[in-house]
Amino acid sequence: MYPSKVPGITAEIERRIRRSVYSDKLPPVSVLQTQFSVAKQTITESVRLLVERGIVKSGAKRCGVQICRENLQPGKIVIIYRGESRSLLSKLANEIRLDGLTPHPVALNKIQPVSQITQNDVRGVIFIHSTLTVELAETLMKAGIPFVSCNQLFSSPKVDTIDFDLEHDLNWMVQSLVSRGYRRIGLFYSGSLEGFNDYFWKRFRQIKRRYGLPCESYDDIAVNWDDTHYNRLKHTFSEIHRRGCCPEALISFFDLRSVVADAIAESGIRLPEKFLFFVFRSFSVPNPVPENGIYTFYMKPIISNLWITGYNRLRELMFSPVPLSPKNQLIHRDLYMDHELPLL
Image (tube, rainbow, N blue to C red):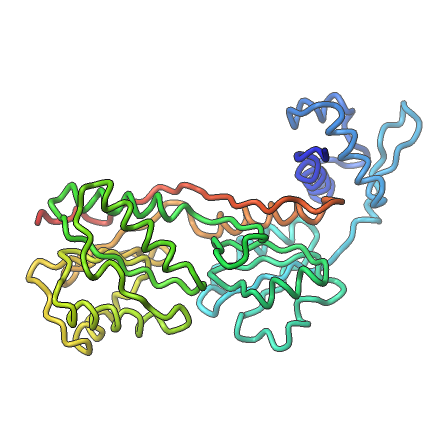
């Protein structure tokens, strides 16, 4: 069996070489064992992979393992993003540059043709904000280019994914509302990946049962995953109005504060006087005062930390001589309310 830790350690040793943590030669194997807390065999195999790439070479025993910086390969790391994310990429891009590689952001709507991400100098691809499609996944697999999605996927189980644990987040939000007396709670989850919304509706109903909350007709409102967030929100309010059963609070993972009033007006719905819209605040934009029944929550870790974790996984895939089993990694994050929710 291929040692699972080898690709990650190989990638980290190469990174330390690029960043001049190791200068002329590698530390002795015993020192590397201590630094990485692994067996000698794992270090030996990791160094062997670097030797095969010409990044290091073994000389006489007293000379140690020499570093050959001239053989460090350049190349692009393609970052596929949606338009609104471009301004948030600087931290991820800087990490890539520190590794001697070139960040190459590409907006999803500009991938025409997909040959932009299969050029010879592309070393790997990171997908953020629900940008990976089945077509792109198949293209990269065929080209042998490693890639990682920073979103959970349900239509492509063979893909490496990393994401925040949204089920954990949802439980936190329901618990927060229940503690303030809310029992009829709805969910607006407007994900842009096929199968994503259905998955979280099921999880949401499970969480409601966990807290002894009633499941209502608004717990199965279908939205088109390829429609705009605004149209999905308007459709949700319209369906709640048509079905004649309105929640006391509606949770939203999307910050639609600027358009919620229009969506309510166009849907024709009349909301209860104490209706509460509980919204995830985008990109930690300050929200000093609750407005019109809209309360917000936010996360402490910035989203670029998630993408950097995805990039580190991508480096493991880049340095593995054999295909690795797809890894689905979920990260717990701390959520906080801007203001205490009102009692119902």
